[in-house]
Length: 291
Image (cartoon, rainbow, N blue to C red):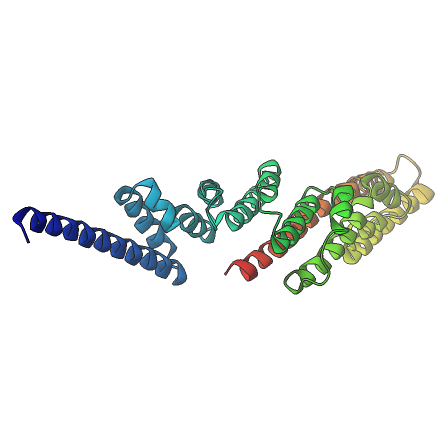
């Protein structure tokens, strides 16, 4: 072999070894990152991802799926703003793109940015039957969060009742829908009116507060009877009538106002609780299908 050929051979062999070494290191880095996430060491995974971003060009970062892995680490730490940002960076040609859009949509749903959430859910690959079913399911959950009954009913017709991974959550959606309708029908005006007719009745109507309702009824009844006795025995100008009449008026009006306010407070408490349940059910299938 001539010297020139030998030099060329050595040069090519050196390039090949360097390339193989590089590929091997990339594989090791990828496996180690997945190991950190698998062990739920999310802070370490984010730190290591930052190091890999400085170490490798964009093309290698894409192969490592850094954007998805980093987004998942942030989501697991409940840092939802950052999770949404990194899930959104996953390119459309990536095999991780559909599930990254689902996770981004769920992150934005928790953040109550429903416009962005809907955009992410709709960006998923609807040509795949499973993704299409999951897309419809997540959009239906989003409609419940927005209290858009008409939109939910339209989407609910297209939910797949035979998809085992979604059966329980779809059944829960229907229960949430009924509970939301019942809560929305309750009126502060009606609660106040009931308490004006029967003190305490508005509190029972507002949220099943039987104890508070009975207590309010007894307080108003006792004060009312004392005021009536003062009026009957001592007249309008008597101290007894003035004191008990004033207390009765105060408690009576306060009970009416409190009953109307109870509807608003109970509705707020209900909305927070039902939203938490809806988001939980939106989350479960993603964990089941993508992990």
